[in-house]
Image (cartoon, rainbow, N blue to C red; front, top):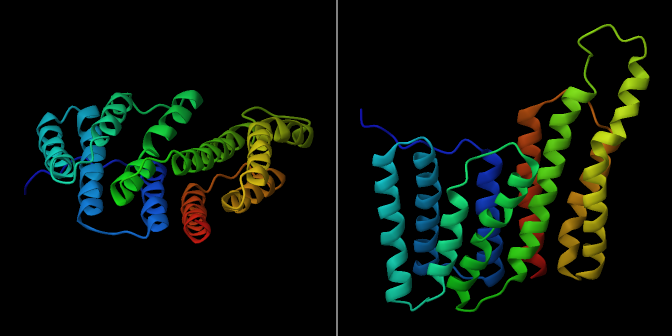
Amino acid sequence: MAERPPVPREHGAWGILLVPFATAVGGAGVWNLPVALLLVSVLCFYVARTSWLKRNYRWTAILLAGSFAAAVPLVVVWKLWWLPAFGAVAAVLAVQPTSQNLWRQLLAVPGLTLTAPAAWYVATGTLDYRLWLLNTLYFAGGVFYVRMHLAAATALGPHPHPNPLPVERGEGTRWKVGLPTLLYHGALAVVAVVWQPVGLAYIPAIARAFVGVIFLSPTLRIKRLGWTEVAHSVLFAALVIAIS
């Protein structure tokens, strides 16, 4: 059986890559050959990154060749001269290894959401940073939210040693664990008010964050958390497209 390329397992990263692409294509109301070629190029490049990190250089070369082959007509035939600049930025960020560090994860978000301005450029022929910023702010909030639940499983869960005051321990750390999420989404609420009408797309995520802190649990249901984030991302994309 032929060897398959290593597929990225970070499901959240797939969403951060593809949802911004969808918001741009849906907002522009365009699906044509150039947009399809861009999607092929993006997918090949993203999977090639995983192959490279796993030192599977054979698949890295094959996938990068596929990404390049799909992108070349966009520049040569359709004269989309800014695409190489998007690719150069993506390449610099792609060589960074996957990390659990907060700041590295936040830095990865604007790199993955570059699919929004790239898709908008290919679909409309114009450059616009607003969809990129809109998606970046949304998915950065998702980083804080998921990390909060991961931290809660440790900070609020059973103590490895007998603890005479389990309630005080849990309640005392609940708001500390949730504080970054509250602060970020509080700031996002201000953005939602100022950035009308498209800022309305942030409202479900803001509500999710505050409710999540109030009912924060030490029990980590990772699959449910993942699918819930997917559902919120799809809702965000639908709202952006509807409002745009």
